[in-house]
Image (cartoon, rainbow, N blue to C red; front, side, top):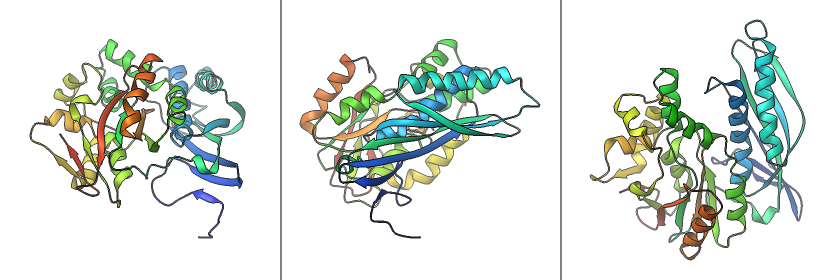
Length: 315
């Protein structure tokens, strides 16, 4: 692969987006994400897919500027009004983010898919990577988890209405406000957004092959009320098992952590929150700011430690 001195973040590691330096004070953030519907309402699906794609730019500490639609649609199976609603939902969130839609591309497919290619901007020296957490940092999570389990229950027709509304509200909430508060806070050393690999999967990426580890305070991780009942009823997505099987070698779960909660920590999320590694002195203040501004699920969920290296102790 050709090397490029201006490539700040590329294929190496598990970064949320690519970053390319244009000048000493300007870099582009580039990302793309799309998927199949996880809710029945096409308008809500469009909103969720757009919010999910925009999140990668926020996780890098950047400002999204432009977006392009990516559409796969079965024109012979579904009415074009469905596509209209999907695109309208996405456009609403694009506009809410202050982003300009500049075009896109569509193809015929047997199953609808939708998402965005997003371009953002950032100062080259202010890029937040998923690596770089410092020992002593506190870990802040900005959204509750459980969307994968709720979506699985929805497919089985068993998702409680209140819990479904809660999950949808979370997935359609931009990480913009959380990101803006984050970048205005000193001593933020690393960040990622929680998506398909689950909370612990993305936490593992932050300390993999590093000289640091993590302690996760499982009782403080924000979760959807009622999601435990769905877990007990067996509504566990296949991705949860894959995440757990892949990452458990890096996890040391204490005996006090119930099985249902450990499973939930591997639940693949859609349009999840930010996981932020920030200096201990700033952490409480940042959480307070977030909660005062309506990000009510924001919580300190762990800390970065020197030992055990490249391991996560869940307690």
